[in-house]
Length: 395
Image (cartoon, rainbow, N blue to C red; front, side, top):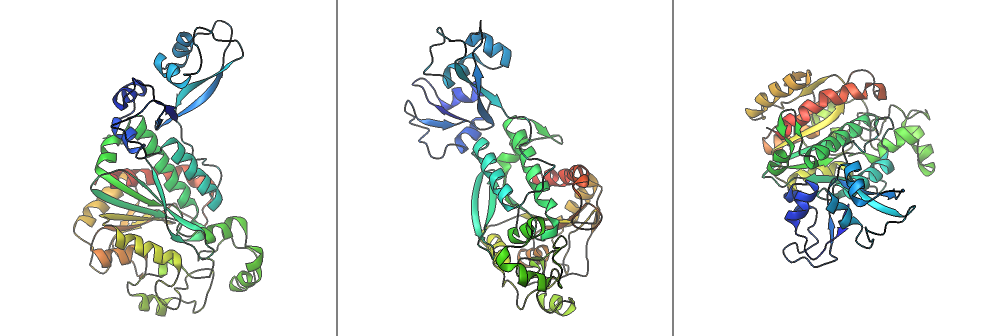
C-alpha cells in the first residue's frame, strides 16, 4: 500500500500506526531518503492494500475505524484530500486492509505467465521482496529469482527443473506466501518468530527453472515448434509427461558432477522428452543460469523441489559435510519423508552443489504417484513441505 507522507509523519510512527515492523518499512522503501522525508513523499507500507469504502448515512471516520478495527489516524492518512467533517453519502473513501490470507491460488496450475503475474502481485503487497532475472530460457523467457531477508545466512530453493513437476512451483510459491504473511503479521511459524527468520536469513528462490517446459506440459507446444517437438516426443502430440526443457534436454542431468557417467548410463542418446543429459554439461541456458547463480552467491544450503516419492536425497560421493546428516534427521522428523543418503545418480543440481561447495544440498521428492501429480495431492504435499521449508530457514 502506498501512502503520501504528512509533515508530522515518521517511519517509527507509521510502524506503530499500522503495526508493521520498522525494518520491513525500511526494506520496502530503498528508493526514499528515509532520514530526510518530505511531505508528499510516497512510502510503501508492506502487508496492506487500500480498499474503497462507500459512505453511508450516519458514517463518520470514527465509526468506520471501529467497524473495521483500524486506527482512526490511518483513515486520515489515506484520505488527506477529504474533509472528515463533511462526508457525503455515496462518496468513496479508502480504508487500509491488512493481508492475512494467501494470494496464491491453490486450485490452478501456475504456467509461466501466471507465475509472472503472481510475483508482481506479491511484490506490490510485499515490496521488501526483490525480484530479478538470473538468465533466460531457450525461448527467451526470463528466469526469475526472488529474494527476501537481509541475514548473513544464505539459503536457496528452486522448483520446476522438470516440466512435468510443475506442482513444485505452486508449492514453493505457497510456502513463500505463507512466510510473507507471517512476517508482516508478526506471527510465529512452527514455534519460531518469522521476523527473526527474516532478519537472520537471506532467502533465494527460483520458482520455475524450466519455464518453456512447464508451458509445454500445461499449454501445449508453440505453433512454430510443434512438428519438431512431436518428433522428439516419439510422434505423440500429448506432452503431459514431458520432463526436459524445450530442446529435449533434462536440465537436472546437465551439471558437471560425474556428468560423463550420467551420459553413459542414460538410455536416450539424443534429445528426448526426458533423461537426455545433452552433448556436454551446462549447454542449456537454464542450467547455466543456475550454476552461475550458485557461483555468484555464497549459499549455505540449497533445496531442489522435485516430485515424486515422499523422500529426499542428501549425500553425494561422500562430499557432503557432517551437518547434512543432522539436517536430514530434522527434515525427516518434520516432514515424515524418508531420508536417503545416496542414490545411483549423477549430474544433478544437488550433486554438483555438494561437489562444488561441500555444503548441504537436498533433492526433495514431494508427493507420490506418477508425474505430473494431480492437484488433489496439493494440500497434503504442502503440509509435508512446509515442515522442511521452515526447518531449513531455522537451521
